[in-house]
Image: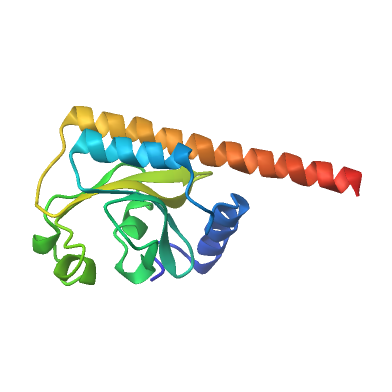
Length: 176
């Protein structure tokens, strides 16, 4: 699913940016797992993920409460969320016409509540830090503020990783 708001050239730019981080399909890392655990604990949700959206899937860099490491982009709540500047909240997915027939709602993991904090860089959505519950609900303003801070920490770590990759690439170019 390519979001209708993304033109093919804009989606190509977004994907180039995402791939420049060198994060997709990497092993779990404590620095990301700690943020995901904190999001789950703060919000009292059984599921939390750091999700990155590529061409065809949503891939979980970090996850709490899910066994799978990815799922098809076409079913992704996060693909919607990453296009917004503000948090994307679905209080009851079962009653939301955009998601009520989604396999992630009608089957495992039985999503009812979703809140995704967009991870955006250079005006492009990379993915989200999200929390998910199996019952409809809302979050307090304090929980929302903490999620915003945590999503900023995820983005900072991603940007640091990207900068270090660029520096390493320059070193290799000069050395070679």
